[in-house]
Amino acid sequence: MNKTDFTIDDIRKVLSELFDVGELELDEEYDLSTLIKDSIDLGELVAILKQQYAVEPKDWDGFKTKTTLKEVFNNFE
Amino acid sequence: MKTQVTQKPCFKTLLETKSTYLNDNESQVLEKMSEDRKHDYLAGRRSIKELAEKSFGIEPLEITINYNDSKPYFDFMGYRYYCSISHSKSFVASFISSITAKVGIDVEDLTTRHPALLEYIADQSEIAFFDSDQRYISVKIWNIKETALKVDSKQVPISQYRIVDFINNSWCVMNTKTHEKFFVRNLCTDSYTLSYIV
Image 1 (cartoon, helix red, strand yellow):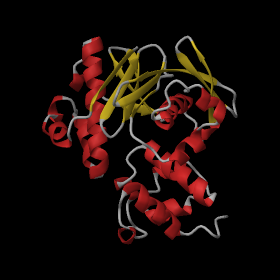
Image 2: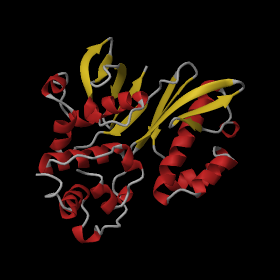
Image 3: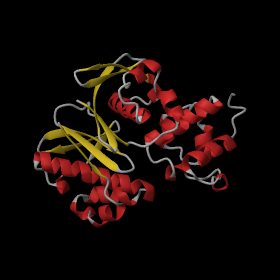
């Protein structure tokens, strides 16, 4: 799978399972810093996305400023 | 070099007591933060200042934590003290050195993580180091590598670091791009894993 096959719904599905939050709640502007509290939480999300969808972050440093679901999704390739 | 790890106080307690450890500059920073970040900010400030008071006799309100290249420090009586602060959901850890800027500490709660995390951060040769106790292995390996990453100050994936040896009670962690090595001490309890660079 490459980025063109990876959709925001995929990341929504993983987040929903990982943090026990309804997919419908996770709109594009959802602030993920309310779910991802530690760097290990982010690492776990990245690890699952890599395993299941073969995508990785473009820019690790970018996660400091990217907090909405849409911004985080756009930081994957 | 001094370290401490404590249970993270609840947000209400930290807010109610902030006048005992937060100076005016830090209070202004706090006001601009989102609610989510305030808890960790207060817990970190209180932890580092408690440690400074216990270890060096420095009054909490006498110091301001500043940052140089994203690394915290404070100056007192002509000396510079280099700090490292780490938060998990339940704990806060701090480290102060008056000797070296290369300080790093990381604390993680021992909780079960998705198996993909271990696959992402470690290979079989690294996992083999933990044969005697594989419980929470992904969290322990993350904790050790995160400490090296903090000291290395590179914004690179944690998977770029590899545990290559265990020497003199320290984990030897190498940045596989630069080949720089970091020696990380690790301590595990029933509820957290704590790593720091000596």
